[in-house]
Length: 494
Image: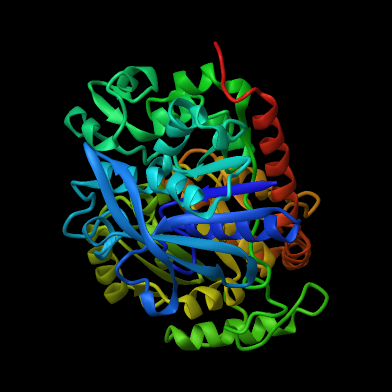
């Protein structure tokens, strides 16, 4: 099967979140199954042209009211030599810092034009290569125009007549909503403003159009597939998703166990497995040392690695006079370490809390080595998300014998089994309502079990480490979706 991935980001070239990891891992693992997979994405300023191969000749891309000329570069996806990544090189649109925006300008004013260039460009790349896919797989709102172009423009061309589309929603909270005046940037007929499903409260909505126009729709966990069809989780698109529910599927992302695996991880001081966990104690001691905490094997360490944004439940942990962290650290015998960055108020409050709490240490920013060390060395991992389409850190945590403390939502509900105090069953600790009290109580429950149910904790760790979160099962489910998309006759009818 020939599969074209259209995405604004893919590791290791550009990343703002889990989308980039998922795109590359899915593409790579599909290639290992024998599929012919290519990725099209922008070449941002930080992607060094010198490390890419220039494909001769300019690429003309229809967009807006005319045509843009881009250069086209390519590179192999690291670790997956059969996957070619193609980079659209256009200085005006992509030659800047930031994928969607910067701290100074969180949402670039010309994003409709930029990502229209990406979608149109993806089809032009196929024409230039003489390679025509069975599936166009669009990832998130920034690729939402691609299914529209396929359905309403490109299928009239013989080379794309038998191509089907799949739209993956990685996060409903980001939809690409812009003023109606930006529609002319999309380079499509004005009849498609309503006809393709762009119109949204007098504006344009890229994700809505992608959902409306795709042959199949996936999201990144079965529970999240249900949640996005509710008023609470649908962010205004739940009605459309209920109309299209027959083609909505939830598939949990896998994790890259060549990178996130305590048996081979090169970023931790000692490797370990569920059969021999002695190395985890070494990692815990190094974690305490790195963060300037007393090295004590008998005190529980709670870790957190997160973007500091509302979705992640940070207010319930850190908000002044509201969050639970101060009470946790002053009433429980434990240590708390974190790595993260995000909203300014949250970073400021974390600095303040550090000055008051000797058992709370934080790195504001991001560090890959420290993120691995937290997963390997902590006893528990806190992830109280308001919503979580899939989540990766809870799966990393389970793999490293670090028990997740999570809210029962989205992919967290699909991958963590709640602790049963009577039997010692489960792989983590869960709560339902996101409040500071719930976070405090569930952390307290985990700390209590650490001190009083040591045999349960050890068995839960081993059970979690034996869970299978590889991409193989996910890829098999995606292939089924691709086949269904092609069988549906390249369109949908209500």
